[in-house]
Length: 273
Image 1 (cartoon, helix red, strand yellow):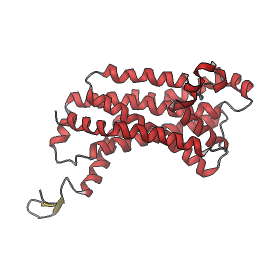
Image 2 (cartoon, one colour; image 1 turned 180 degrees about the horizontal axis):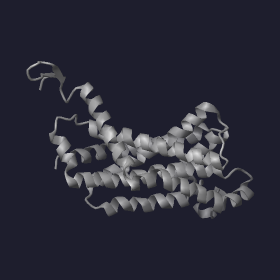
Image 3 (tube, rainbow, N blue to C red; image 1 turned 180 degrees about the vertical axis):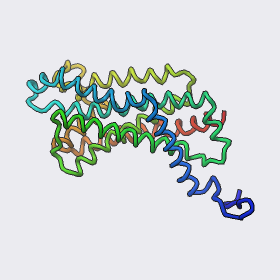
Image 4 (cartoon, rainbow, N blue to C red; image 1 turned 60 degrees about the horizontal axis):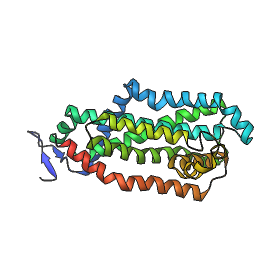
């Protein structure tokens, strides 16, 4: 196929679906499609915006006072990062279920036979997922600020704080995508929610590490959600640690490196069915 084809009678050049310009255009269109679909989905709005904010308020009301007495610090410094990360992960699970439904309905196969750039589908999902997580994180931070949360690390630390849930959420989304495109059972994707719930309850953002039994503290301290929450906590309080940030990057990049290729191959196979 040539790089350029020709229009009907007016002979206006039209870019091939394999060109870079087509990739950019088709990615923008499909990103808009996904964002509009999620915005119109009550479940997506609940998992991305409403439930994380309600969880933040609940944590502040139920355990906030006890954590303040136990540690002498603002409990929102840990609960705001926790709810931002939980919102990123729960939304990824919901979108994985929607992806499976699109595959079963034949929508992915229809895109495959249309003159659409092959990479625009996965690229659009990455962009839309990142935009969803960022919107959810900003919403949680706004609610946290209304409750008394404050940044003390400066502008750069604040930007990194907002970006970490996006990075970690995209890494987790590769796991969900790989699961969704290889299995026909939505219950398997929904089962990931059990894992994320356990990660939330056994993390340093839920209660301080010292509140857990000594035998489980190493697991709580080193599990990925605790690492991300601790990094965001340090950024918010102005005590950023290169060690924590490096550990967070290792977890996120490691998940992407392991599951990105299976997710891409599975997406391609699902599109050709």
